[in-house]
Amino acid sequence: MRYFVITGHKAVADGSFKLDDLAGGAGRMDILARCINSAFVLSHEIRRDAEIYLVMEGGDDAPKTVRINGNSVRYLNPDERSTASLIRNALLKKIPEGHEVQSSPGVYVSKMSFADVIEALSRKGNFVYLKEDGTDVRDFQFPEDPIFVLGDNKDLTEEEEQCLLAKGPAKISVGPISLHADHCMILVQNEMDRREAE
Amino acid sequence: MRYFVITGHKAVADGSFKLDDLAGGAGRMDILARCINSAFVLSHEIRRDAEIYLVMEGGDDAPKTVRINGNSVRYLNPDERSTASLIRNALLKKIPEGHEVQSSPGVYVSKMSFADVIEALSRKGNFVYLKEDGTDVRDFQFPEDPIFVLGDNKDLTEEEEQCLLAKGPAKISVGPISLHADHCMILVQNEMDRREAE
Image (cartoon, rainbow over all chains, first blue to last red; front, side, top):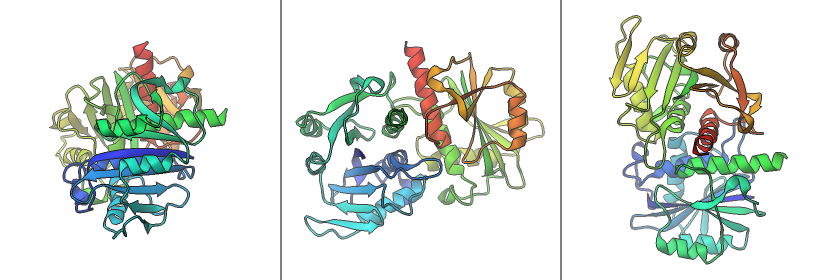
């Protein structure tokens, strides 16, 4: 499995945003939508071996985490608006304390924080932190079930970084120029595709 | 310069589409918007050395070509909706026959067809056709001023392909799995970034 964890530092967790204003009032929800695209979208199919965790950290109702599983997801299209609509539908769900709720096939929402997600995933795979001073992804020995962790348009907060570093993640970088999270994901996916094809 | 030519086979050339329906009624304008993102968007800046040609081939008013130049473009944001709005503003412009009109800084529109674009660009650089049976991009010697040519979610038509092949393009592929045009562009950009950083 390929896991991705993205922090949406201002992403409006209560779902009270307009699909017409994803980049503004929704707190850069456009970036999270593009990260979903990068996690799953192939020319003619969906990556079934991927799962993404989007941690929504903006607004009164934060934190919440939307999880999308490639193996069971349905109604996922490549465009930002329809993808953000899946996210919003999840965020509008009532979530009983300590539970995760399914909002549509393969899309789940919970009140997990970044620290909760890291703790839960630490039992499932091996952390890989995307960081500009990391090992070049092309020289990297991918662990089994890698869990790639990225910030949205901002780096992880200091507290988040400490939480992740406590798990002893590998650190990788994708190239000489600083890129958006969704672009970094494409480069990581391609490198893994190449290794698997060898 | 890095040139990109993308054919929008159903992209509605008269601009009569809703920003709420980019993937549907607009004829997969969402793909073209993401290609613009891939051409220009970096973490903290815009790629100034890139230029994209989007050939709109859908509807009565087709063909039209929207050209965006990284060196002079303004008001470009990463999200699909605002990017598609720049495209639509261009398509709604009145275009005198044989002319190219600027709709906003760095955004231009003309009545050029795919064949016209290929002919015009043939004086500016060297064609590179993204094709699944091409040379691996990692083994490719990039020519000076490469002009990358891609279809949107459909391959070039037979006629378009003949037009391009007549120019003797190099052919490259980006990996073992078939990807969307905007994802292919990210992989090409990264490879060129790495070569330039060497």
